[in-house]
Image 1 (cartoon, rainbow, N blue to C red):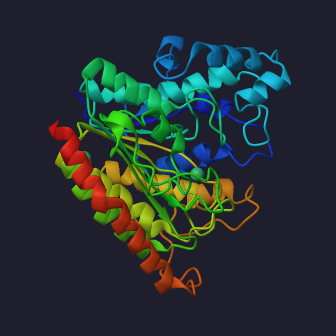
Image 2: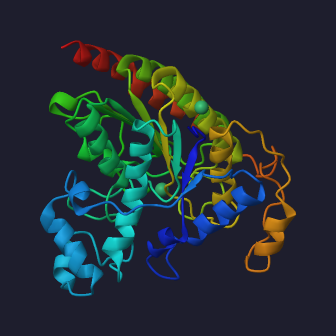
Length: 390
Ligand SMILES: [Zn+2]
Ligand SMILES: [Zn+2]
């Protein structure tokens, strides 16, 4: 059997879009997959066509009345008032024609990734169009109509009774996934993100630890604006091992939004491709150490679609395949896209060490992040251990 990692992608995923001026631009998927192909990183059988999920699959997480509203909006038939109630029709998440079908493809790609892993077809899947982490059970939010990660998690719980660890390193808090499983001790959500003080969605504080039976199983590390690589990586390294050791997950799901990059127009973190190379390596190691290799990686945010997203997500795919890529971006990729790009495309896969000006308050930021880290994980490990014992 071909156990090579799978990349779930086709142009059908481009139907999930909110219009030409919206930052969530499917071009980023095309640019990424083309870069992966130009690097020669796709072998036969590795690229898998996304399958639509069924309405019944969505119902594991989302209530029927919400799906009905999306269905009608998808056909242009819903009233603006009702759309607002469900988080649609806003500037961030406007309703669009064919929205339900497009979202079913995105959710289906995460879900079929989980299925492929559980059916033993492969251990690692990158569902590059997934990662719609802001969608709540009954409300669309922040470019996210329905929550693909949550549907995949619900499937894994129902069909296999698994303990799922979900790690979210998008610059925005993974609020949808966290709150959908907020009282569930079988789903551990860990989110490292820019503090919500000045950034959407505003949640993700250390004190959000879950509730009822799930108390202790939500972990948040809100970072200072302008956090750089070393601090970002330090936080990740020091968090994951002790918490996963306590939780003992059966499968790892990562949300790999790459909007924490220095160049990203929507956020204020200042990391580079260094983090986008190191963090998948660490996640990969965690998946093998704790989850028999089971690792479902999702995409997520990332709004510098010319310079950042293709490189960040190519690095994930290379890590899954255990391939060290040369630093020179293939000239064929540059030739194909430079004429369309409004900015100079990067010539190297990895940002140079001195590519961006250093942040003047680096020491203060690093110290503050360390304080947050200590506050966050100090109790998390004990809480998880004590809860698991009962
Ligand atoms: Zn592996
Ligand atoms: Zn984001």
